[in-house]
Image (cartoon, rainbow, N blue to C red):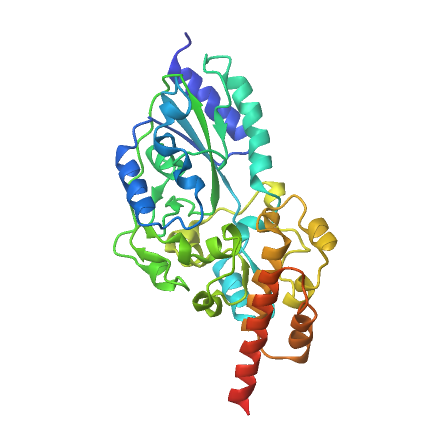
Length: 355
């Protein structure tokens, strides 16, 4: 068998050629993180994301998910394209739809999966491990814990992975292998006494350091959640129509963030800084066309309209906003109609206050 250290250097070189921005190797023991996961599930912080408990211990035990695994190769690739000032200006313009930075380009799953297919083809020359052993946020894997142990960053108080050299705006991927590659040193935590991410969260979803209640998180409410958005949360959502970046935007380590270089992750111009009225009036066919190949299709067309109805309810009262909302008053989706009614009620209340 070829020297594992030499194989690791080959893998590092291949990953760089494929456009990955970082790589590290971890073992498969993440017992402490398993305890944290079990407590998180016990508290029901996962909301309706039942898949988080569906696979039992496989999520925290790579050797059970893919027997024969003894190492996990963690990789990252950057998608940062909007600085803190631009994000703040956009959030203050309540007539524009704010879309989370990661979703402005093409869906990262396909792009990274294609890179991993090439990488795994080269690695298999040295491995006997069979089956699909590469993952991009599509399998029960505690990817942040493994990436931390692989030296790619520490898990911050906002529960995102942070690297002090280039912030937290990156996607993660994993390759499970049976090659006894040399391990990298786990990253040390550098959050210190900072609580900026906790303080800024619009819905107080970060209920304590390293504890996220997804049921309150705007990313969950506007993407994973398929039902009505709780009334108590709607005003806090502002003009965020898909996801939320606040806890990353405020993080001081992101002043070192590396700009996106992967072409697929560059923002699509038809999604960037668009008026809410324009987005709300897209027909289902237009929505499918304009969001094709992006993560924006995840909540479905009704979820898309639901989110924008909330944002329109939080916008300044104008004739255009009112007429746009009324145009969907008879929408076939009861969920959308309910949010339109709520939005119109918000404007009635605002007009009462003015008069």
